[in-house]
Structure formats: structure tokens, C-alpha cells
Image 1 (cartoon, rainbow, N blue to C red):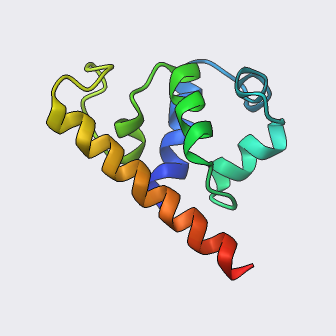
Image 2 (image 1 turned 180 degrees about the vertical axis):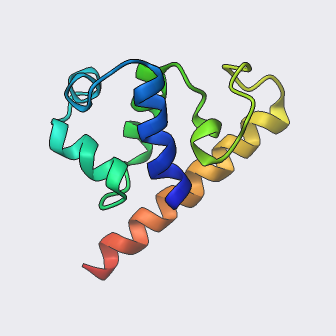
Length: 100
């Protein structure tokens, strides 16, 4: 998920936050934020939601959605798409944990 790590860093920088400041905002350490941005660790779904809130970006933007002016999904189809993407991430995370 290369787009995700790029977007996390981009969102943080656009929000004018350091890695430490974002870490404080989401209740994690600077090193965890650096791992998210480096693609070493995928953030759990709830953490991605926290990052989205802290940086004022919709969750869908982190997956490549270009229109960040729409801060919230506006239709049932938009909401369904966001849920589908979050479910896909959760499935990947679960699969990775099962491999450990």
C-alpha cells in the first residue's frame, strides 16, 4: 500500500505537523508515525481514522481519492466505498497477523 504511506506523510505535512505532533494527536509515538510513513507498519483502521481526523482529510483520500474538498462521504454509495476499503485493510491486517 505505497499510496497509504505517501498520503499519511503528505497529510501530516499539509497539516503543518511534525511526526511527534501527529503522534501526540493520535496517542502514538513519533517512531510509530515514522513507521506508518515508511510503510514498515500498516496503521489499524481505527488509527487511520484518527490520522484522518487529526489532519482534516477524509479517510478515502488516503487510498488515492483526489478530491479532498469533500470532507465527508455524501451518499450511501460513498459511505459503502469507504467501508469496503476499510474492510479490505482490516482483512490484510488480519491475514498478516495470522502469518506471525
